[in-house]
Length: 239
Image (cartoon, rainbow, N blue to C red):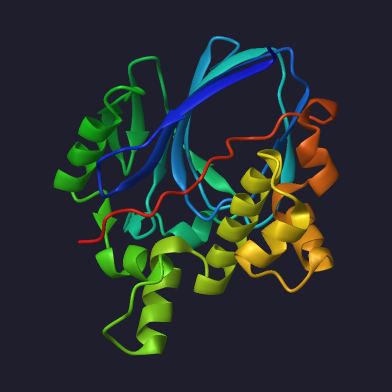
């Protein structure tokens, strides 16, 4: 199989998902839109890289060459790094100035390279050092919670912590959920009604923009390039 990947949930309030993958002989992959940012580590051609990658507001094509392995920590809405605002890396990213098989540089300091298994321990170190912070209101609002402060203040806090508006986050996450349902065999018309799209053309535009696929292509994935990680976003416990 050209791309192999696995992912898992986390009990950390700062982490949305932890994933790892391996690619071999694949030329292109469709990277779907995502409302979250992540730290990514990968090795390609014997060279180790580390980078912070921001939310992606539309689907895009990623080029893959040769064999590579990768690992990532996807952060929950509301988690951010004060030295690198998420708004600065939307549809982009910043690579570490130095990374080896043992360590990398983040916020001007050297850190031991984390792994799929110890992501939570690594994140706790970032939190204790003040490199990673969390605004609990943001995650609550994104998942439909009732804000206790003014709407404009909420909007500013959501945008500051996520780099996106509440509307953009919901559009992206709804399209991802729609894609999962269609892949599982749910008819497009039922998806329209279940997720609140106006009609099938509205759903089709969302899928094309955020997933880079039509409903027919999602129903026949073997006929298209591989997709980046697509999984259901389970609502976190609020605190």
